[in-house]
Every structure is written in C-alpha cells, then in structure tokens.
Length: 383
Image: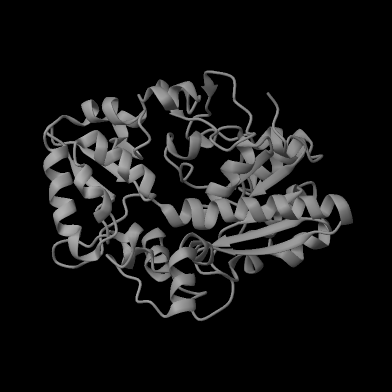
C-alpha cells in the first residue's frame, strides 16, 4: 500500500523530540525520508524507538565542515520538506538554515521543530517534554501526589501531540498550499504552543470567565465522581467517564445504585457518590466489570498496562502493531502506522543495523559518483 505523501521527499537534519515524531508521521504517510546523522557514534535513537526508523534512509555527514554543508545542501535541493530541531540559530550557524536551503530550493517547506520556538524569552532555553507540559498548564490540572506535587504524566505528550503532530499537520498544510501556488514556507513549530491547543478547554474557560482551573475544578479534573478511576477487587482499575446524564444513569442501573442518578452533579453529594462507586467496583475483578458494562453504554473502559496494550484484541484487529526484524536482535513487534491513511508496511519490517548508513545510495541519488563519495569518506566528510 502506498501512502498519500508517496511523492514527497523529506530531509531530516537529525531531529529528536518533536521533529522526530513529525518525520515518523510523514514517513508512515508515504514520504521518502533521508536522515542526516553525525559521523561519530551510533544513531541517536535506540533500535526500537520511533518505529526503528522504519522506511528512513540514513546518511552520516559532518555538518561542521564546509564540504559537509555542501553535501547537506545538495540533499536539501531535491527535498520538498526539510525538518530540523536544533536550538535556535544553530542551523544557520551550520549553514543549513532556512535562507541557505531556500537559496537552493526556493519552494521548500522548511520546519524548525523545537520546544519553545525560534523567538521569545524562552527561545534559548534547554528543555524536554516535562518542561513543555509544565509551561502549558498541563501538569497543574492533573491529580496531584499526596505531597501536592504535580504527578509525572508518564508519556511524552508534548513531543508527540504538541510538537510532532502539530509539525506534521503544518507541513502537510504547507505542501497543499505549495501545490496550488508553488510557494514554500518557513514553519516555526514550538511544542509549548501546540500544548496550548491541547489545553484549549481549560485556557478558554479561564480567559472567558476568570475561573481558577486546577485539579478538582470541573468534570475532567476530578470534581465529580462520574469521571474518575476506580479500583477493582483484583487491584486493577477501571476508567469511568459517564459525563452525560444518560450514560451515568445506565451505569447506576447496572450497578444497582439507581438512587445516585439525581446526585450526578450535586456538589455537596460527591463524596457520597464516590464512596458508593468505590464500594461497588471493589466487589468484582476489573475484566468482569468490563464484560458486564462495556456493552451497556456506560462509558467504562479498563486501565491497561503497557504489556496489556500490546496484546489487546481490539488493537490487534486494527493492525496497530507490526513485526520487525533487526539484523542483530532478530524479530520483535513494534508499533505500526496509526495515522489514518498511512501505508501499512510489508512484514517483517527490515530494519537497518545501528551502525549502518545508506550514504552511498543517498549521495548517488543526487549525482555523486563513487569516486566523489570515496573522496568525501577519506576526508571524513561522510561515513
């Protein structure tokens, strides 16, 4: 199966974090990706991460040398999209910034994907996903720990949703406009900006009403018992999100607690409702409750562990995981393309070794002879 971006060439200047997530989405949608890496050391991602660089060709280039910059610009000249995730100003200092690339490819879509963006008081900060979540208000509205500290989210939400998905969407939109106008674009994508979109409901509530949005302020931050996590007899958990009255009524009838129905949004009765639901769910194992409640429009779902997710029947039927093969580690499963419209790879997905590059093939594709490549390799410009 081919993807909708089949004819799009992407040059990835060795991104991590938001940029890497965006490039993976583009690759799964069919784009041909070349990733530039540094000469020394193994590739920065572990073999299992980000789809094992599935469908990506890799070329090791010394961007600090003049000859290396020339190689990178030759690759950029045939790219529709260039993605970089350096700190602000670094790409320009390396000679592969937007203006340098636009000089060789006027209609390029150039995306700088960082945590804080290219301008503003935090542009020069070092940061990671947790910092981006902290700045967006995300950590402040979750259930705190017993000592009142915000809990760690347990997933790189800002890199994936705030940054990677935002960058991929912006890139695809710019490609659509380019197809109509033949004009390129420079995209300054900040994961913290994208997280404001994730937090829109809370931010807009505060902007419009002045409400102090913290944990326990409204339905989705734990104010009401109809939206929460409950422990079952086997120590596992259920998520309950019976926000609409009809779903809460269905749940109460199924639990034999019809007397709670009129108390769903009674502020002074939430402790009573929560205690009753706690006691009810504690009476049976999690999966017994799932079997009993899932088909009765109760908005109940199990809290799965990572190990349970990868063996889940529903995800398996939707083709969420694929078989991959590493030349050293052999076969293992990995997350497959999960974006709608993405191409499904042939299985097993053959992954390159950690110390393997496609430099010869990549450079030959932009007109370098074998003698040129041998010379660059002797001069330690490429590997």
